[in-house]
Length: 247
Image (cartoon, helix red, strand yellow):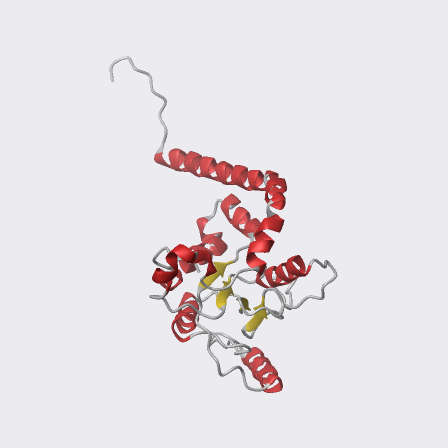
């Protein structure tokens, strides 16, 4: 190199600097998202109008009516909510209901678990029509993802291939005896779950942004369990959709 004097950077330093740049970039994107809230609010009424007038297949338009005949268009579009505990799946159901009913005092339809360590939460598949009483859109709230990846794979495989049923209990091999007994007792109180299975059309993966940022700020890779979980489940091929059809 002759007389050139280049500063030496170890591989660990380069990796650290790259991670810092990535972290700052994501922080900036999150902050810009908050700055754009006003712009999004301006289009809220337009979006609400479109959703309220939505029927499965309507987004294809009249020009694609011939193409639409080649698809099995459902009478109701089913949206499946999945995500880690405390990510806000049930809160989304309640916020959607309030938004479309234009009433901030609308009682909560979905039970919300306010503490991620609490023993309560969603243990049955719960069906919510959006807006209330509509037959066009239906959101399904589910139990939080398990820490056991194989259990998540098994559940998602069943839901995506066999369909989902209202009030179907979600039991896992990792559940302790007390929790299993509690779920079975509630299932007995509810009675039989729906015999009609509805196929999933779209999946909404809900995560807690604060938990993601906390994981990113953690320098210990072994403690980044939250981001590892969502990365593993997000890459699940069962959650991938092909084609460009807009229902």
